[in-house]
Image 1 (cartoon, rainbow, N blue to C red):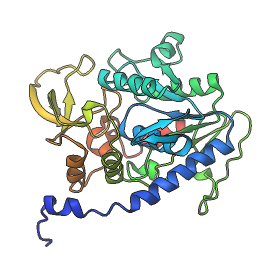
Image 2 (spheres, rainbow, N blue to C red):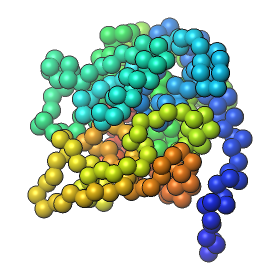
Image 3 (cartoon, rainbow, N blue to C red):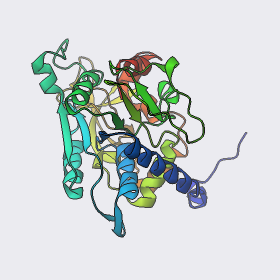
Image 4 (tube, rainbow, N blue to C red):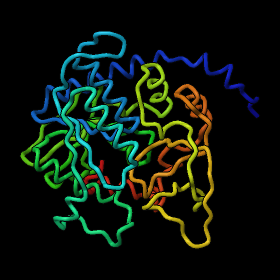
Length: 319
């Protein structure tokens, strides 16, 4: 049996030199995207992974003037699919960051898809997470994007572990896992036919621990939800469901107050927090060293419906 480890002694000795290699790889990928495609866009939700990719994009295309201040413009806009059920704190943070950086933010609203009839909900409180695909593909068609840069990582979920760094999508926006193109070393096949597009994932090879180490090192701002705070929650099916207008109390349940944080943020109807006292990125690094379940496995209700739920959504065009 392994002897218990004192995290306070372990944390200062965590070797972070690999972050330089991961950063270099990600910047190379971002520059390849800008060189190979005509109309790229960066998916920016305000979540931790997209904040990391945004900082990497700043390093790839802007001039650092002092500390974490950069001068210049990114060669692509920021894009977000707003389900209408996003956490208000995250939406406010998204708008604030885009304004601070002076970058163009394109928001595709699912409410507009619902009004058009391209998205139909079974009931008003149905999770909108899976329906994001329709709104995303509509935004791609409207703006003629030929590649979307995302913050997905292979360690998040089984289907994402199959994903290439440059993931080809057919003319229907669908992902075919058996028809992915080989990626040998740093050689990428970016050829597409009219109507097709790519998804590019610069931090595919990062882990959740890498992300938090980088967030701490670079002092990257995040929505307050990622850090410990008091919240009303409902214990449901082994998860802590936040009490909101779209996740109300069900018969037989009780509301509790708990100190929690979110490991990932998304649609309120399917994103759950975990109990935690971590107040900053360094605290979360210490916590992450001990976890055995990925953030999606621990906090996303929609990924628990079946082992293949994410792969099915990705085949339909999901992120």
